[in-house]
Amino acid sequence: MEYIDEYRNPDRIEHLVAHIRNISRKQIKLMEVCGTHTVTIFRNGIRDLLPNCITLISGPGCPVCVTPIGGIDQAIALAQKEDIIIATFGDLLRVPGSETSLLKQRGEGADIRVVYSAYDSLRLAQQNKNRQVVFLGVGFETTAPTMAAVIQRAKEAQIGNFTVMSMHKVIPPALEALVKSPELKIDGFICPGHVSTIIGTEPYMPIARDFGVPCVIAGFEPLDVLQAIVLLVRQIEHGEAKVEIQYRRAVSPKGNPKARDVMMEVFEPGDSLWRGLGSLPRSGLKIASPYGDFDAERRFDISPVNGREPPGCLCGDILRGLKRPPDCSLFQKACTPESPVGACMVSSEGTCAAYYKYST
Amino acid sequence: MQILKIDGNVAKAVLSGTTRQVYLDVLDEKAQVGDYVIVHAGFAIHKIDEKEAKETLDLFEEAGVFSPVSENNHGVH
Image (cartoon, rainbow over all chains, first blue to last red; front, side):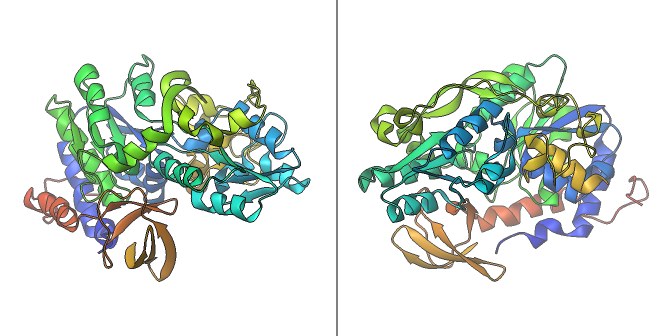
């Protein structure tokens, strides 16, 4: 069973909402970290169903949204080189860089291909032996192991024209930055589902233990999110702070050790710049030296670029949970899905895109 | 997605009538035809635990959360 319909059952949703209203007393702020949760919450009108004492804030769990503009500029610079094929996940295509976007560059002749899985990019390299294929590695702990597996395959097969520009990030340092933010004051985290499938519960323990903030790992159907909110409210009302798994059919406490091993065999943690959150220590994944031949930053002259944020764009504050899209003067006016100014409007998991799609 | 066929590290899987190629490189358990897996970016990352799926629903059932909305509850209507 896929266990999708059972978790969308309208009667059960109604009962859960009533239960939440029944047990909620305190004014609380919960943050859904993951972009996919933001979409579920919007698509099912969950904010409107919750009692007024619960505020839901969207967090920075959208990998494309937190990729700094400088990273996009670097990718675009590579795309402009003649012998390079850029392979990328679809969302990155339309994100504006400081001057242009990958999509616009493609329109001007740059060879940029959208792929669904990292293996597709390896295949591209095998099919185009006289060109260099650079894959733009974006994503958190759910995607990074898949990238690592492909890099391992590339090494085994000695594929000489394939590299990865790793812009991968890991979630726990971002949670720590958010929980330390004096302006934010989060009472509980709805933790990402599939990131947790990989990392398990252990990385969230310091948030609960050291900061007293409950963490519940949630699935992506409306019932999942509502159950997670029940678990969080129960903890908060009882003064507890622990890490719980609502999404038990997909997450075990130990996570997926094999995926983690593959990931940490190929990558190593390093400081990484997050849009909105700034540079966070040990929050990014760089390709480790045994796999250095597959590191695009080593093969090509990719100089650091300080990207220019578009004037008026509030993506940074939105990713930090301090502002909402309607607070941005560009929202729905200069910035729409058809002509996005910032990444949060481009990505299917972006907060601004979700607000735009479901709030009008 | 449900696994229909396995060939080394690649499986053919189906969801709602759509079949896809799914890589098994990072799956931590041995996959078998008929298994349901969570797929991300073309890779299986976890076998869906049916027992847990049922239990999660049952737990809330037992807590009376899914019983008919009583007069005391602030209903959605």
